[in-house]
Amino acid sequence: MSEFALENSQTTSSVTASLWRVRTFINPYRNRLLLGIFAFGVARVFEAMVPVLTAVAINQIAEGDYQVGWPVAGIFVAVVARYLVVTLARFSVRRVGLAVAFDLRQSLYQCLQLQGSEFFAQYSIGDMMTRAVADIALIQRLISWGTILVIILVYASVVGFSFMLYYSPVLTLLLLPPMPFVFFYAQYSARKMGVASADVQQRLSDLGTHTQENLSGIRTIQAMVQENNEIKRFAKTNQAYADAFYDQGQINSAMTAWMPTLAAICSLTIIGYGGNLVLNGTLPIGDFVAFFMFVNMVVQPFRVAGFIVNLFQRAGVASSRLFEVFDRQPEIFDQPRSTAPRQIKGNIQIKNLSYRYPGSEQLALDCINLEIQPGDTVAIMGRVGAGKTTLLKQIVRLIDPAPDQIFVDHTAVAEYPLSQLRAQVALVPQDPFLFAEPLKDNLTYDDPARTLDAIWQAATSADLKDTIEEFPDQLDTLIGERGVTLSGGQKQRATLARGLIRNAPVLILDDCFSAVDTETEEHILSELKRLRRQQSTLLVSHRVSTARHADQIVVLDQGRIIEHGSHTELLALGGYYAELERVQREGAEQEDLRHFRQRSS
Image 1 (tube, rainbow, N blue to C red):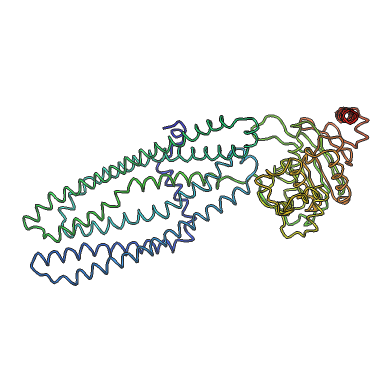
Image 2 (image 1 turned 30 degrees about the vertical axis):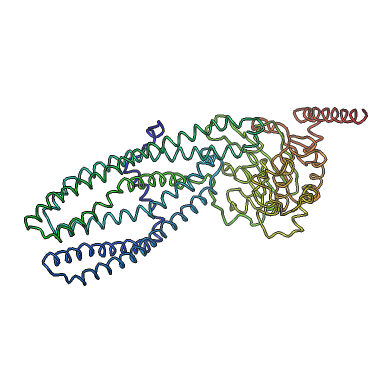
C-alpha cells in the first residue's frame, strides 16, 4: 500500500458519515426509492412461494398423490409476478441513482463557479474532472446497484430465515455459528478497502491532471521535442494508478473468493445432517428441498458481499472527496446592499489599498491611493510582479479587497451585486482565453443575442475585421480549444473585441497589446479614444507607446506607486518611466535603421 494511502486512510465510520450526507440529495426522490424498496419486498415474497409450492408438490408425490397441477400453476404465477415486480423495482431505484448523480454534478459545477484563484491553486483541473465524472459515477453506481444488492440481502435474509425456522429450527441453528466470522471479516475488509479506494481515487485524479496538463501544453512539448519524455512520465503515473487498482482488486478478490467457501460449507452441513433427518423420517423430503432452496436464497446475496463492500467503500471515498469541495466556502461572498447604484458611471477611488497573498510574507500591494474620473484613461506600468494584475483583479473582486478600500461611484465594491459589478466593470484578462466554439459565439459570450452590426463594429475597433474576412467561414469559424487555430495576436484581438462589445462604463485591459504590432496597437488605441470618451478605461502595458495616450500613468514597483502623472510629467521626472521611454525609443530607432539598410541593400 502506498504512503499516500496509509496517510489518508479512512475509518468505516468516516466513510459512513460521508455517505450519510448524500441523503440530502436522495430526499427529493425518496418516494420513488421507497417504492423500489417496497417492490423488492413483494418480489421476495413471490420468490419464497416457489420453494413453498415446490415442497407441497414433492410431498404430494411422495405420498402417492400426483395431482400437482395447482402447485405448478402457482409456481408459474409466482415466477411471472416476481419478474414484473423486480423490473418495476430496479427501474425505480436506478432512476433515483441517475437523478442523484445529475444533482451532484450540477451542485459541483455550481460550487466550482463560485471558487476563486486560491481554490484552483490548490486543486488541479484534472482532479476536479475526476471528481465530477468518476467520483459521482461511483455514487450513482452505489445507489443503482449497491442499494438493490443490500435490499435483496436484507429481504432474502429475513424471508429466508423465517421459512427455514418454520421448516427445520435445528438445521437453521446449525447455520448460525459462522455468522460472527462473516461480520468481523467484513469489518476488517471494509477498513482495508477504504484505504485502497482512497488511493485509487487519488491516483485517478493524478492521471486526469497529468493528461489535462499534457494535452494543454502539447505545442510546447512538441516544440521542445519532449514527446518521449512525456510518454515515460505518463507511464509512471499510469503505473501508480494500475498498482493502486491492483491492490484494491486483491482485497475484493479475497472477499469474493471467501464467501462462496462459506456457502459451500453451509450446503455440506445441510446435506449431511438434513439428509440424515430425511432418512429417519423426521423431515419430509419436500420440506428438505424447500429448506435447501431457502438456504440458497439467503446465501446467494452473501456471495457478492465483497462486491457490496467494494461499492460502499469506493462510494464513501468519492462522497468524501465531493463534500470536501461542497464544504469549501467561496472566497468571494456576494452580499450586496440595496443602496448600491444600479448604473455605474465610472468613478473609481482606491484608498490605502494593501494586499498580501495567503502564505506570503511580502505585500503584493502596499498603500495604493488613486482616483479615476469617468472618461479617464489610466495606464498602469511596472516590472513583472509589481502588482498590476493584483490591483485590477481587486476592482472586479476576483480577489477581495479589504473593506472600504476600493469604491466605485463612491460605493464600496463589496456593496454591489457581483453580477452587476463584473458586468459594468469589464475585465479583459492578460490570458486570451477562447472557447472551442465558433468565433461569433466567443465574441458574444456574455449576450448571444447581440446583432451582427455590433459584432462587426467591435471586430473593426479591435482590428480583427480583416482577419475574420480571410477565414472561409468568417464569424462561424470554429477556432478550436483555447483558440488553438489562432495566432497570439489574433487571440488577443478577439478577447479585446469581446470586451469592447460590452460597452461597459469601466473597461479594464490587462496587458492586451503585448502580442500585436505597433501599427495595430495605434489603430486600437485610437478606437478606444473615440469610443470611450465618456467611459473609464484602465490598461496595463509595458510599452510607452501605449501609455502615452493615457490621461494618467501609474508606475508600480514592489506593490507601491513610485510615479504618477501624465506622459509629459513623467518624462520630466527622469525616473523609471523616462528611462523606459528612452530604451524603447532607441530600440525602435535601431529597428527602423535595420529595416532601412535591408531595403537599401
